[in-house]
Length: 109
Image 1 (tube, rainbow, N blue to C red):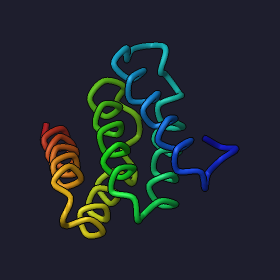
Image 2: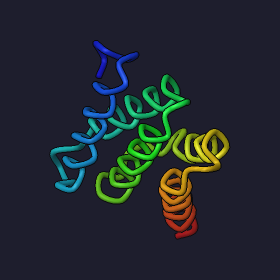
Image 3: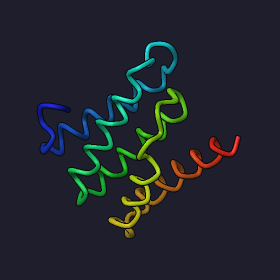
């Protein structure tokens, strides 16, 4: 992901890999979760116009938040921005709402 920040397909592929790997959670992610989140947040910022990448990125952030518990800095802001950029995309809206709801519930506990 670092070598091809402007290549949407490379970024989507990397995001999907991180999201799928997050299901394993646990000790293997210690210290790497924040790096993964930052890479996804960067991809979301570089590819604002792609609803597919936004939805994929929000999905992966949700999996990381649920299973890896990385630093959450920037996740809610990214979800809110994606909702604004893609009001017509039901998938973006759903993944953004899921992520925001999860983070808010977790913060309340």
